[in-house]
Length: 186
Image (tube, rainbow, N blue to C red):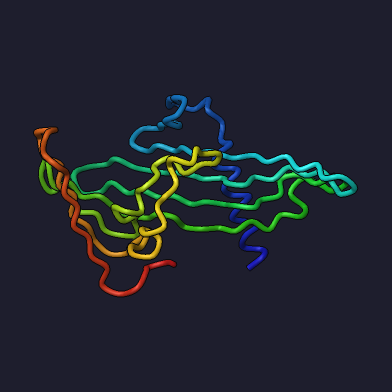
């Protein structure tokens, strides 16, 4: 498992650091677009310099988003997060004490059945799980998810969802989702 984590982290860094000289466009806050594929992400760096201990640089949250817009029925989305990745530690080589936690946050496909109705299949956030769309630290306290939603509603679901977005912006969006059995990948 440890070797898998190191290789996954190395592949993640290689993917996010790919040369941007290829035919494609980078837009700040929107990532890098290459044809029908968009690659984006963020990193939250934490520098630690405790007294009488080793100084280190930690990637507290490193997230990678990959999405594709190919046709009406095939529009995949992937989000993975690495947390607790020690990037550098005093008197050690780069990545030498690296054992990040790897989490598959989302993996789904959207099929646009009509202009207003989308079928989503895979692992996704529930409507309550979308409480805070910008989940990178540091955040202000007003974006904290209320405790009642932690106890009463799951953050993720694995299954299918129907998302209805009306043409009239004054009408509400409707989401119906179902999870046949436990999470696909907890």
